[in-house]
Image (cartoon, rainbow, N blue to C red; front, side, top):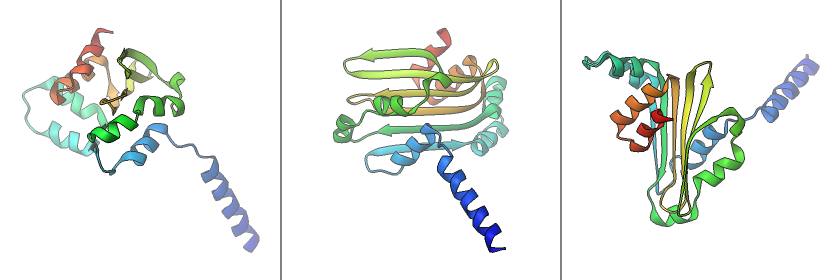
Length: 168
């Protein structure tokens, strides 16, 4: 009996050692709740509640029903914004082969990249990663979406940069 428990314990520890964390989840955990950083998380339950409201917009209701989550991480503190670079930090941990680039903007030491992870012909996750002085932001949108859905989300949330992705 003791031997079985010992073997089970070793097995469970080895699983936890070899389990790889999603770099995006780890990044949100690392910075969430820190001073000078704003974190927003909108769950699928919230989208379900919003879809239940009579919106008089079938397209928006469809989008809301297909969203799993939206997470936003942004640096508000100007001093912290000078020392951090979300883009460079994520670039070394994120397996870019899992994503397709939609758009890249490089300007005055600032980088902004839009990436999508697809399942079939649908978008499973969209990432917007910005890094550089005054522009550290990470937006993760998960769901069963297409580019037109992303445009609808960006208009609703007022994210102008995402509205341009449908052109690509």
